[in-house]
Length: 342
Image (cartoon, rainbow, N blue to C red; front, side, top):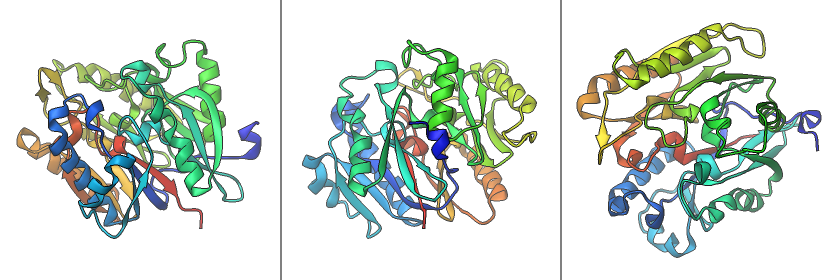
């Protein structure tokens, strides 16, 4: 099947959603299982925030459905029992695409838990087909290990990603760069890929782009930057910034670049936390923005103000970004949007 001939394309995240999917955390798979109550509270906060804007479907393990139902997450929230190992649905859920007639399909990428970092992951690898089957959405099987957090699209044929992640030998060691790029283009309808080098320091996903840069609109990219030369993120973000400044998109446009200042350095249990405002999530009429408090209070305000300026028609809804970050991700990592095709 040549998806390019079928003219499937991946819509931009800011396009109207039918709903958002999110998985409920699984204590047995957590890095810090004792934090399960606080992590669950963080997920509940994210779900309630999103439900203020659009329907939310929560993927739950069947044995936990009754427990989660008792949380009364709201009338705009439904539970869908599907067995899963872990809770980062951006990475193991389907990537939704639309054909030229406006019909929805879902790409089922292979999932290997970020290069085999966590086992088991067999249940997670089987989640996307079950979501697609439940909603009667056509399934497109991609012969590529890839996570949704490793790509961002402008909806007009341009995609950004990082070499650190997509070309990592722990994903698709048998494939060349050209083959990987070919599959990504084919299954997302992409004409041009902008390859950044690395993701943020401390990111155990091997550099997911959704922590470092994202499209704000066609021809406009937001990048999180660091101004401290002693911080490892300084060299990382400066290199990526130079790449973006030299890039053109699929329409031949030079990119307008918007900079967001990173939050101050923070550790947990001796490891750096990958704090990123770019792990925000578009919802219908709003943005769910993780903020970090404490020493980050000033940069929190700057990030919220900049996003309000960039998106005057969207309400900036902040949530506690510290609640789930110890497990390795944040709001965007937990979510997956289903585009509205009506």
